[in-house]
Image (cartoon, rainbow, N blue to C red):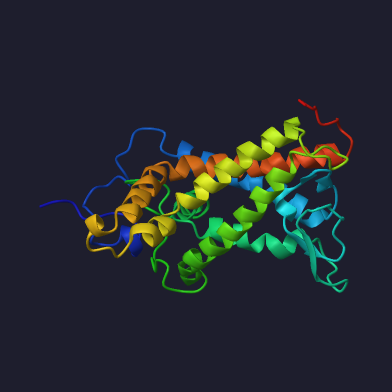
Length: 271
């Protein structure tokens, strides 16, 4: 007769668990991955929160921080041909970044990969494969606030719009500080890398894959959508790497603009 199951009285530690005395059978350093994930996300959250609430040092001609684009408050710095539209009047007292960041933030918070990352990293739900989580109950994403994760597709549409605006910002980077076209600085390269990663992460999204090729009964009757579905599928297999790379690039692009705006150095010009 096998020994009785050990552990708590609910959740994965209930009486239906396999009758083994150990909490798990993994002998590797399984905790390194969730710990590293939690640390990386924590650093980004702290940095982005500071920059979002700062409300300053986000523009240095011709570059605008992706955290503040588009800039929709009347208090925004004037950017020639830039994404500053005073849709919010002078009644808005906070940083203009707080108006727009809800859309890319919502897109990443509800992203399938990021859900897995912060569920494991911060909530230990579960902490790793084949490692029992400490929670006694599991309700999935059926209750508030996690039921809001189902808004991911709608945040995807908003994220595409933001990516289009950031693409325009990147094109404006081919000007110098006097707004003359035909120039390229180190900041231009930083913004080019960032927008490529932003688009790669955005279109590698699971929702994008479903929008492109989902609910098709016959791929042969839709060759264009089938090719697009295949391309998105290849990017989707790298969704985790693209999620981290784009998160790093958008932070570095903002940091680069901040350093220029505070006079830490001058943007090197290639031509």
